[in-house]
Length: 77
Image (cartoon, rainbow, N blue to C red):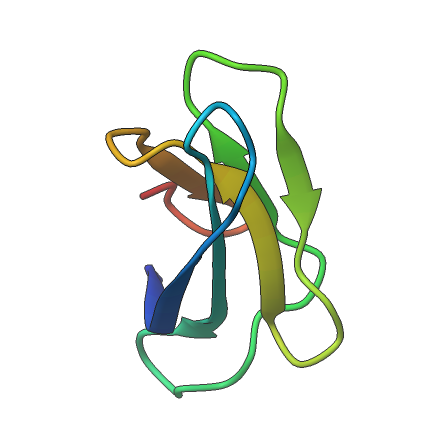
């Protein structure tokens, strides 16, 4: 099974380093069920968060950062 990201929205932050708050919901690509407890990680940094019970997450990232999504039993994307 693969993780699928939907409803990602960015809102500008007023921080000095031009970071954005990225919010979204992680769902299963087969059954469209929310994926809770998955890790969302900004590659090349120590920044990561876990998805909530409904697959929701919020993470701070710079405009060109790449997000990685992982969970036991799924292929990472």
